[in-house]
Image: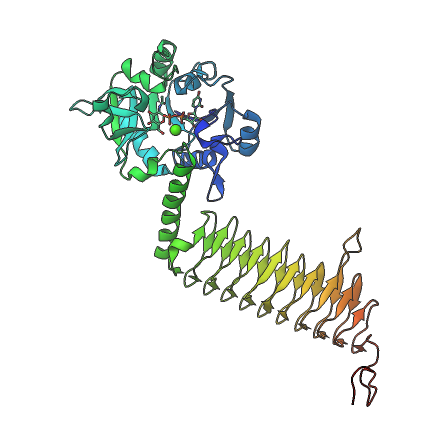
Length: 452
Ligand code: UD1
Ligand code: CA
């Protein structure tokens, strides 16, 4: 039997933020959600999140997480005190407890599984994940004997200059035999520089305590301040992009690209520089995305291109060209083989197949059929100051340059709208609609003040 506890009660003073540290986001997901996800592989019986600072906000973020129970630590008196809060909740529990700091978001599930299996193989009282890092500043230092048994963990602030030179650090990831830990927790004291109950002091009373080295020390990067948040971001981005390149995605200048780990890509897609893919986004094979594009919560069909454009909450079909400088937002659905061109904004609209909106248009709350051609500068006037209204455009209809479609309005199939027309009434199929005043030419006229 295994239970997991995630320590997420601290404010994270060093972040200088009103948001609890564990809710800061890393490539689309909060730190604590990442920690929760990392322990999925071991499929624990119970999962506890210890919450305190802005507990309601943390609970709200994690609501609906399977098996998750919240335990309140009303005063944050240290990591040892945080784990003490579990005592009433695990009274008859006889298994192992894995404790994870809520601010160590890059840990791989496999590393937790390995820690657990080492712990169980050796029947340790406690097993502590450690790493040798180039810069141990800020971390607790772990001191072991020749048998790899932990003698002490000394917090950075409590270290002597000699101790501080030890580069073996405590990752903040532990596995404990719970019945033994339950006996020890009440013995912790605050006899240290920070006047806190340190969970790390458990090693003074438990035996045997073994250190387990993590393979990739980058995994255990803790986030205490914004600089560490940004390095974690870089580490995560490197991981995500390398995995996609291995899966057959080309990236031109990967350093300038960011991709959330919730994004799905298919092989033979090319991601060009300065492109950012976020949230629930899926890009099919053979696409060319970028340069300079932002795609969020959207799906792009195979063999499409998106250049210098922003696409959010939308869906684009196959073989469609978006951009340069298009903006699709608020549930736009574009069909196959379309062209959405320069300086075109589409909002909450459905566009059929083989339809072109090539230049300088705004279409909002519109439904367009197949093979429609929207002339340069066509605008839907969809808002009357109070409500949004719908525009319907049938198959093969063409609008001339600079036409205004005043919604609600329907143009049926095969309608032609002359350039400069303001359409205010519905138009049936096979018709020309023209509303501009006839052109007047006065021959031989010139301004009075100009002499002949
Ligand atoms: C801790 C370890 C240190 C280790 C480092 C790894 C202790 C005493 N020190 O230090 O040895 O190298 O993590 O990243 O454990 N928290 C609570 N309640 C509290 C205090 C903290 O829930 O009362 C939570 C925080 O929200 C955070 C985690 O525990 O998620 C770690 O706390 P933090 O203050 O960041 O500990 P470190 O000083 O980094
Ligand atoms: Ca920390």
